[in-house]
Image 1 (cartoon, rainbow, N blue to C red):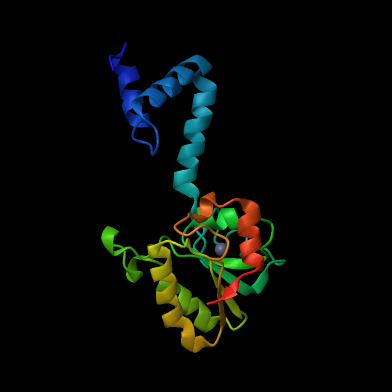
Image 2 (tube, helix red, strand yellow):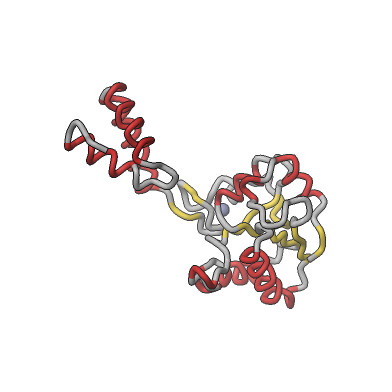
Length: 200
Ligand SMILES: [Zn+2]
């Protein structure tokens, strides 16, 4: 691309570093910012800066939180006897959006992937085991991981590690297309697969 100005070029190159955004889309956004003026642009940069500076991980479930406890963990109406183990906050949000689940979560921060060099120690698996051994309230674990090879590997690993705790272990794999992503599964299908979860 030939840029009309150095500043336009700089902005385009920065925005094009974002996932899924090429230089053409970045240019469209840059021209949009120029048109909309300083106030909306400041609001956006402030929101992003605030987000990155001030969000933390929930000290119990490791979901994204603004305070020590996330919205789910601090909610007294949630059923603390059921815990869904998810790979990341996007999957947690997908399950929340089904409105079929009232338990709590544990966010692993990814799945085991030898190809990408992610082993159990890179994930919150020890924290999960620690949490399960300390919290006598939890009776059932739903392994809500994508039915991919990495998701299955992670589920089997966790199952092995927690088997001795005598909890009910279930999985929501049924109803989700094999190799599919939780995030892209439609809400009705995902909601149904939580209700009809099967013993793992
Ligand atoms: Zn939490």
